[in-house]
Image 1 (spheres, one colour):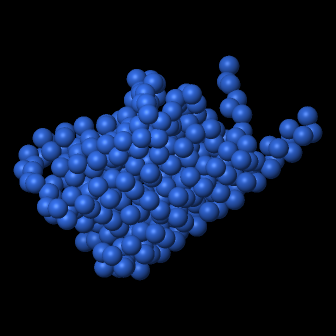
Image 2 (cartoon, one colour; image 1 turned 90 degrees about the vertical axis):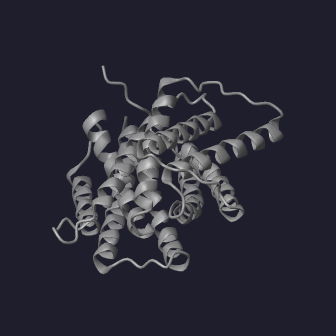
Image 3 (tube, one colour; image 1 turned 30 degrees about the horizontal axis):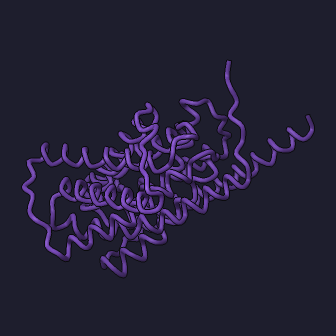
Length: 306
């Protein structure tokens, strides 16, 4: 027997949208800082240092505010599964970040809402009409313009970025299925700890040689960790008790911030094909959002008639 999941309220979705948009702004700062540091220090070391700094900041702030600390619910299967997926998303994303332009990487990452919709259709039997499938197809074309699958222009690192997108989309689905009573802070901390462990795994597998961070880079890591901690908490909150297919398209705000940061901070300029691909991905996502609004109105109308 299939159990219908009740539609989230307008206020729930609004809260999710605001949380996700704000989180994306914080993530852009973190990504910019991470790229600057990871171009000088090994990826595994950066991931571990960032995770430790994030955990320390979150625990300190929480204890200062509430004079207590609890990790109730940290051992739940959905919480641990989300942590593993989040670690996979972070590792593949940071690796691709050191090899690609920030705006191009973000554009591929923007495939996440489209991938999420496909996963909901294939594994959770959510009804996806031909219009939304068409939007997904347009998004795939946009992604190919960035990947450039020709023999002389193929960007293998774009496939690493695409794997981060699949990790991210699956993580968001799992987030919706975490017990609502589990504190968001606990989910965030478990995910950060998992990312730190994944960073150690990368370091061992790649035979990294770590070096002490200079004071300038240490400050950058701490600042980046502060923004990541805030962004991670907002991202978890964004997908709690909401309609993921409604909230997820607001990840596209990342593309605006990353383009500005890439140009003004990193001095990066995307080529015309990549820009065209990015626009197709954004357009398909916005159309997906429009179709979701139409679907919700239709469901609400049928419920009113009954």
